[in-house]
Image (cartoon, rainbow, N blue to C red; front, side, top):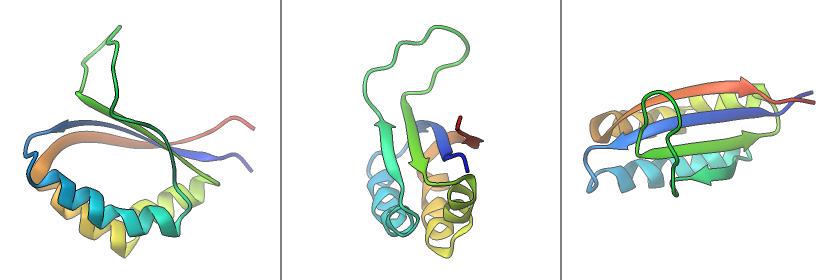
Amino acid sequence: MPKGYWIARVDVENAERYPDYVSMAKPAFERFGAKFLARGGEVHSLEGRNRARNVVIEFATVQDALDCYNSTEYQAAKAIRLTAASSELIVTEGIE
């Protein structure tokens, strides 16, 4: 079964509020075995629109990635994120 990945592109607009999102999301990430592969860091924009913060999170399965997103814990965190940042988030299947 292939791994699942969250790929998020984020522009933080409220730096004071964003840490609240991070701390609220942590229990969901821990519950579903999230492994952060990239979180922030230097970006080299080669094509298309860039966002300041780029995140890649690995999960054991696509279902785990989806379940994490849909969990009560993450949905509470998402409500905070929506007030602090603009973003895109996708779940994609890895290669076996």
